Figure 1 (spheres, rainbow, N blue to C red):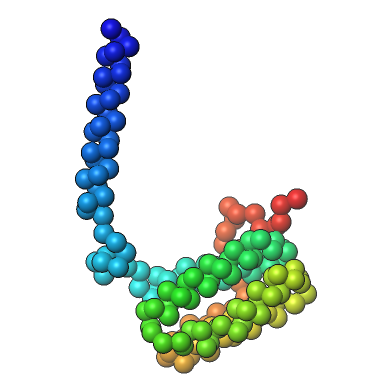
Figure 2 (figure 1 turned 120 degrees about the vertical axis):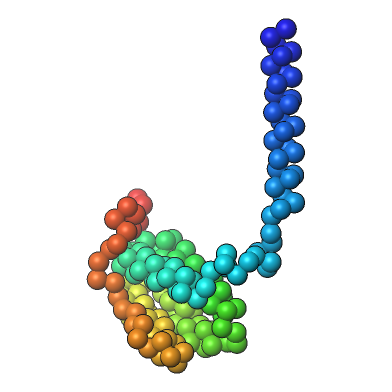
Length: 156
């Protein structure tokens, strides 16, 4: 009796969960049709880019190449989003070569070349900001680590 009651309750709960999931999927919006208020603007994207830039610096300085590689990939994704917002190939022209050079330094695990490659990316970002009349936004090497909850040293 107890077993059949438990099985009946479980069946009802599963059916209700499946019905709720189906109902929710009918109301989900694809990203392309999201209301403008839900789509991040350029400022939000660039704030995340700045976070990635900071993390990239500390990962590269520590020689944590998997983390540095991850952060460069994330920066590239963010730059793709920026390109979609502003149109054209402005972003690729501004930072594309510097990103590729930085990827090579990271692939080569070249700690001595990392600071110069990072600085070139930062300079390219600043040139793009200036070209887009946002020269008041100047990116530089981070002076301190704001992410005290993340270890940047490579795992041994």
